[in-house]
Length: 370
Image 1 (cartoon, rainbow, N blue to C red):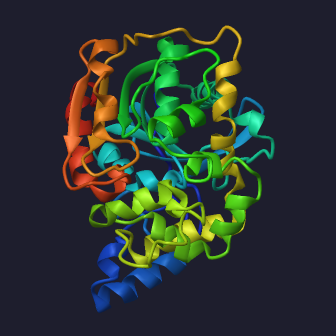
Image 2 (cartoon, helix red, strand yellow; image 1 turned 180 degrees about the horizontal axis):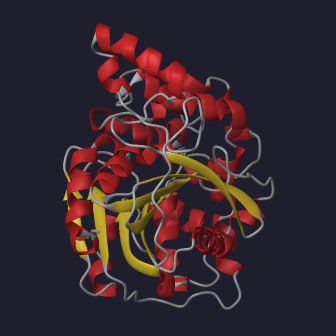
């Protein structure tokens, strides 16, 4: 593994060169005097709302497998690559970036294809697991990394297990959040299989609702901020996630029957998501769903079913879609896997229960600290 050189001292007003983050916006939102200091620091050092205290987040773009990818990173040491899901950004790993970098790791969080400042091809065929996995290898190559820990959530979790199957020589360990490992099944149709497993229909299952271009985009882009606030609900609103998954229960829309309410995000954190999705729209993220059934047609794809890489699976007690029981088979397929469950947590595990996730991750990786 290539070791990173020590970062140079950042330049005031620069962006993407290791800006010092001296004040947490969460603190600023609660203390009047801190708000003034935060505002001044933001003007002087171009701090993005929500970036955490004492962590210098560096930003860069790399070329990988024919696309340009935006990467946020912090720290030095053994590399940990974090793969976000829908509808998220590198920013979804902000708490883990701080914890890992402070503990002596090189925390790396890209905007995945279709999101944020990374390229977002219009063709869903560019979002198959084969292509997405090759892009992760290209990311490692661009950063000079031979082997890394991979951690993934939601769609990033699905890609995580694919990395273990396809490129085991580039993977040190795997940490999955919410998304269980599913062995490859040639000819399978993921969205249809899950629809049937839940006893739903094309009209009442979100993955099928997302298939028709333009329909879901119109719903979500009609009120970007309000709809994202409905998506990022705490575990106390877990039933709203099932309303989302069943497209309102009647096919009327994922969010039409969800009432506005509490989100676990601060206003500043919600601003980050709102700004990016207002700029990019949601098509790139939906293309991951539109490519899902194409994966079954891959010729000479990975076989499985077992996966022989040190792994940890973290489930969330109140996730109504990626339910903990869906991961029950994993110890039979991944020898020695560490299974953990976080209580009082719904789907957005690394954001809603960051301290618990960070403690588990750091314990699992403690022998790799530098």
